[in-house]
Amino acid sequence: MSYWAKAPMPREQLVLIATTLDDRIPTDHPVRLFAEILDDYNWSAWESQYHGKLGQPPIHPRVLAGLWLYGLRRGVRSSRKLEYMGGHNIDFLWLSQGHQPDYTTLSEFRSKFSAALKDLFRYVGRIAMAGGFLDLVDLGSDGTRVKANNSRFQTWTAEKIAKALAELAEEFERRLAESEQTDRDERDVLGDALPKRLPPELAGLAERRQKLEAIQAQLHSADAARQKDGTDPAKYPAQIPKHDPDSRVLPNKEGGYAPNYTPLATTEGRGGYIVDADVIVGPNEHQELAPSLDWVAETFGEKPERALADGLFATGPNIRELEGRGIEFFSHVPLPPEKDNPAIRPEPTQPVPEADWDRLPINQQTKKLDKSCFVYDAERDVHYCPRGEVLRYEETKRETKQGETTAWRVYRCAACGTCPLADRCLSKTNTHGRTVRRDVYADDRERFAAKMQTPEARKVYDQRMKIAETTFGIIKNGWGLRQFLLRGLSKVKTEWLWTCTAFNLDKLARDFGRLRAAIACEAVATSVS
Image 1 (tube, rainbow, N blue to C red):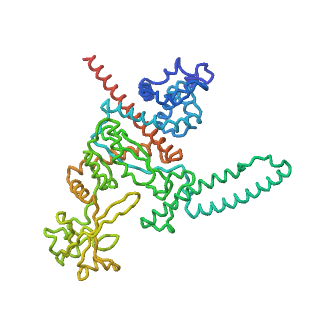
Image 2: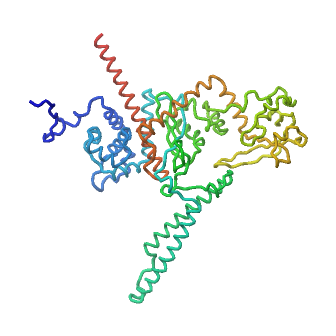
Image 3: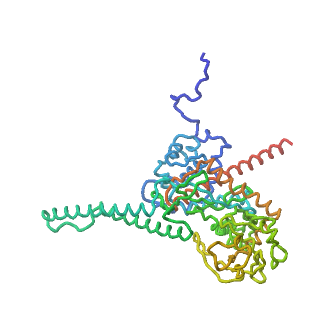
């Protein structure tokens, strides 16, 4: 008798699985809850995008969507790997009921149903809310960086693309001359019967030139914007990735630069569900806060109570817009340069004592007296300098930076000529007196900063990291989404939405599983008693 255990399922056995495929999946397996939730969804919007009569019978979108959502939960992001899992893993076979779509079908399906997928995302969130697993009391909004499907070294600059266009023009002229010579040679034999059209190889070159010229125009515009923001484009030129020109070269948190997108997520604090998801190009996620909260309110039919976001979101427009919507906003606001600033005095018309001059805050960029040394009097609409001199309103200037236009009220001092603090206050080239700027949101920011100094506000804000950043930690570290597989902003948005929908569906399945287990335990306890 052999010492070793016998194989429970020898390879030559006629029946590979038990009596039914269903017998191989435990009753508490999460794939069952995935399927149950998806079976209850109305797939008519997805079905309407099929012809309905012509062609071979297609696999139902519920099956393909289920494979993608369950696959993403299992860390499967590649259509080729999903094809393999669908043909070899029992839980995937059970979910697809034996359908084994190839990677091409799976890949095309992933990119096709962006609008319908948004509705499925909304459906999962509403089911969670109806079940009491989700609420809109505390919402955390944040963005992260995910690499684009583009090499960090394959980028265009204005110089590189000008060189490429010159080489392309030479090649076009050479090919055109060869084509014209061929036309003359054939005309001598065939006469004038030849059709007059651009040869395919020249048409391809012309199309490529159009694309390069469009990218060149983007680069010129980006370089102009960088120069306006104070960056020398000759030293630091704008870059556009070659293979995914929709992405942008941005710094990575792990170091270095690479083509990136900025995925956004708004997460609620009770169950950790994502209630809004989007992707933008560039680092300006703070501009998406108010639109995201509006979408959440419209989707769930209920206005969020509190919004939590990091310090980048604490802009004047966000503070004012959320107050106007009746949503309490919590964010990080840096403390003044020094708490014991001697310029903050009971009577700003009186000078700061000379003994306290060395304690006046210094701006780390200009190395001159910081703006906080100039006290604003809202009633008179003037600033007072540390010497008690008045800075009166002079003009309003508008400044556009990173697509945002800000109106600044400029205040100037007329008594700098004989001021003993002039060396600490004015640059060597300033001959017209010290100026201080104040924008239209200054009052909002000051009021908001005062609120955020209270213990109650800080206690609420301390929840932000747990609510907003846990989502990205799970998706990036646990699920492996460090780089998008699709290219182009539209497809990347869809890829991110698939991931966020799978994230919520996994949470919903777990919550339903725990609820049913609790109900079963209660029923057993009741029957025993």
